[in-house]
Image (cartoon, rainbow, N blue to C red; front, side):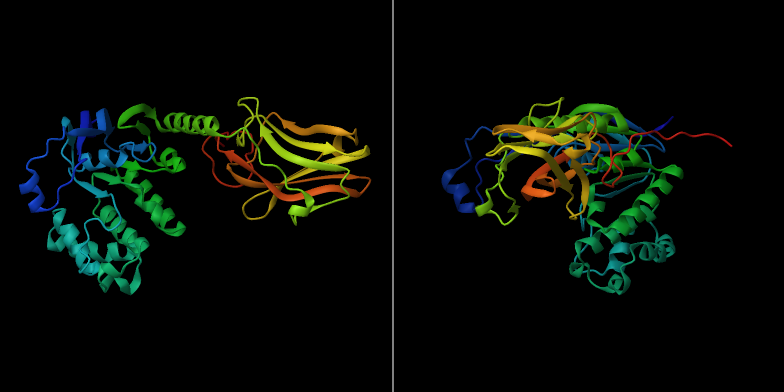
Length: 405
């Protein structure tokens, strides 16, 4: 299959200016700088190809070289070494408002951008109504773009980029600036471009978008290709690495649950007092972060001041919308007798199926209907996605099965 884009040993180096002389007087008085120049490699030895009609995603942390790679591919930057060849027309959407003249109206900027891309007046006139309809910014199309919001910039910029029907479309993260309805509209159109034979190169921090839109992906780290292959495998490897790094940074010291006289969230007779909520997993040491789908232990540490019989411990997890998504009670396994002194009660599971997010934790202990201690919203539970998630609050195990009727 013919390649739409092919890069071999692509490198881009920038000079780091430690000493800056902006005034002409400084240059004459001090003379030429004697500081040894330093360089920063934003992209190192990148070799990849994009077959015609396929798509490639670039992922990695901020500053890893993703945007630099796109600018080299589009010709904005000249590579320091290596080569890149692009077969066919190229359209790019790299930054909000890039390529727009602020004093010109949206309609005039459409004509300007299309002209730069090599379209004739007849072709531009034929595309004008279609671009305006896709952008859907109403009467603002005849206002100077300096008055546009960032979302309106993205709408118009994306409309121009895709409606000229390029052979290769290069898109940076800017689509994320648009609202949910426009993002869906963009992704639907990108799917249509792929079916029509266009090649896509996309940068996104939304790993779900990469796996959905891209055949292959490159994981860049400090300008180097850390991984390159099928999009679902590369994004999963990247997600595993991100989770592992956060786990290594997570503190092992848990915040104490406040005493009754220090918090309006506390009530109860007080024979038992909760001290801390401590999540952990078999895959990682005790920490304040769990991975969705992995084993988990949700421990409540307490101090008992007077013996309690028939105790029932409760734990409620609430999402950011203040909706209780998980309620657990030890009474399902029978009442507990609690002796004087310190102790821990824990709920353990082989797979915690809540999706990624930050949750609020409330704890309680009762005996025969009497509240002994209850603390509301006194701890946070951070859960990170273990794979690509599709929304919701619950990760249902299972598989999709296709059959022909």
